[in-house]
Length: 301
Image 1: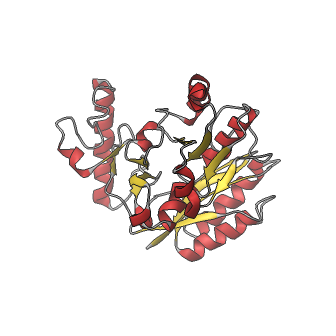
Image 2: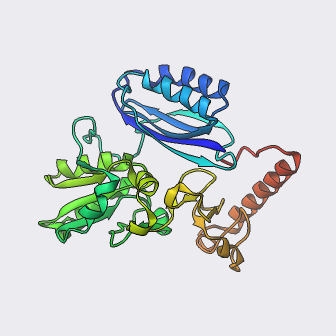
Image 3: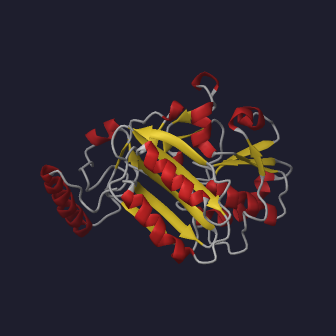
C-alpha cells in the first residue's frame, strides 16, 4: 500500500524558488511522486510513496519558514496514484484571483468533523460547496448549495450575484481538504460577512472520522490523483477519469455510445472537434504502447 499525503499551509515565503530544488531532490531520492505547489503565500499539494519517504518530506516541509505546525491528511492507495514528481512555482497555491485575500490574517471559524453535522442542521445555516461543478456532481453534503462554478476563480462573482440569498444566514463552507475555504472565508469576511464557518480538514477529514451511519455526506469525493474518488473511510471509489475532459466517470458510463477511452465521454463528446479527437486518439495510442512496454506515458498522472 502507498501512503498518500494531502497537505497545504499558508505562510510567507520570501523566495519560493530557493525552496524548489531541495524539495524536489528530496522527493526523488525518497521515491515520492505527486505534485507540490510553492508560492509566496505557502505550499499545497498531494504526494505518495512509502511511509518513511512521506515522513521525510513532511519533516523537510515543517522545517521551512512558518511551517512548523503543518497538518496533513493521510490515506492509502493500492497502486501508485502518481507516476512522477513535480514541484512547481505558482502565483497562488490555490487560484482565486483576489489579491486582497489573506488567509494568514484571518479565516472563518473552524469546525471539527465531529461537530459539522450539528452545525449544518441549523435552520439559519446556509451550506455552500466551494468546489468545481464536476467535483460536486459525484458527491456533496445533503442540502448543500452548488455554485456550479467551473473554477475557484469564479466564486467571487457567484457570491456577488447571489449574496442577497443569504441575508441573516450563517455561512458554512467546505471543500476537499480545506484550502479553498481558507480563502473563501477570508473573502466573505472582507465583504462584511462575519458569521462564517468552514469544515476543518475538509471532506477528507470528515470521511475519515465520521461513521457512515451518521454521515450527512452523499456520494464520493473527487481527488486529484489516479484514485479519482474516495468514499467513507477514505476507501477508493468506483470512478475513473475521462482523459479527454478530466471529469470523473462511473464504470457504467463507459457503456455510453459516446465513450471512447482517452478520446471522449458523454460529458465532453460535443465539446471537442474532430481534430481534437484525432489528437486524443494518437495520445491514447502512445499510452497503450507505453503500457505494453511497462512504462508510463508522460501525459498520465
